[in-house]
Image (cartoon, rainbow, N blue to C red; front, top):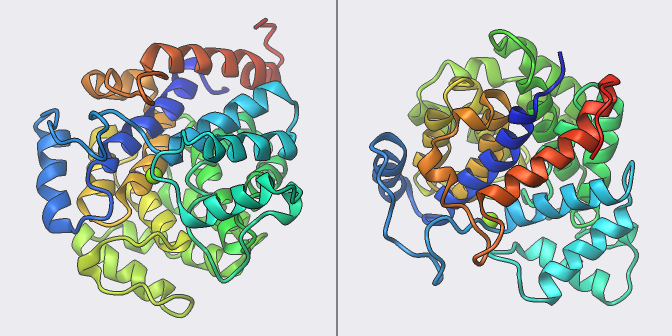
Length: 342
Ligand SMILES: [Mg+2]
């Protein structure tokens, strides 16, 4: 069994939908995010609220950077970090980036000044989620090759984030996308153990935290957030639970994994868990949306939400479906020996 075109589209578009839904309330507390998530994801209401002048459906840097990674992977096999670095740089220098993070912006400025990709990453202790949030497509093209998945997740990440925790977070997100596409019911303890093993090859602080997930998945969201914050406390002071999920890579990746593993077969509920908590919810929902979308496929994503995605009037649903089809034909199906031409 190998990923279907529907699953590849589900991953890419599922990320965009999660990002777009979360973007409206990014940084807000749970007191704002929960009723918003109830309205959009449980009652199917389309919000009239605009964020920064953008209509609902505009996705942000998370999905813009994931899109550029896909385009780079399709242009240069197996991967050309210099090309991806140039695409990251151009998103910033042309002013197209939406809601960009500081570490990525600083790295883009270094790339623009001529610093090579392997020296441009923002150094530790900065450990935001900017390289993990765009790593979903790595899981699509490396679904059957963990060594390549780990290497590619790290290489695409360190262009902007040099801290190994950021690379380990990217491995976890890519790995979750790959494992999401396996057939049959998802074995949560097995998935957590595999992701922990892969992440531990890069950073034990992240891997050991992921190993705690089976116990957390059994908790309610109200209990899960303080539990996750307690796990990462030795490494990072994540503040009060009332502020929601912080942009720290370990916290936000763990929350996205929690949201996905709690209800892996229900995209809408997965996004609800990712958004209702409050905090950096465009990113938690982008990552969880990529994972759940890869599992349920485009057919499992609410169509009224998918039909709203856009990037400044471009990159709407049809264009993403086309991109997903080309990615599947070029980078996913050939792995299995299927004879398909782009
Ligand atoms: Mg964003």
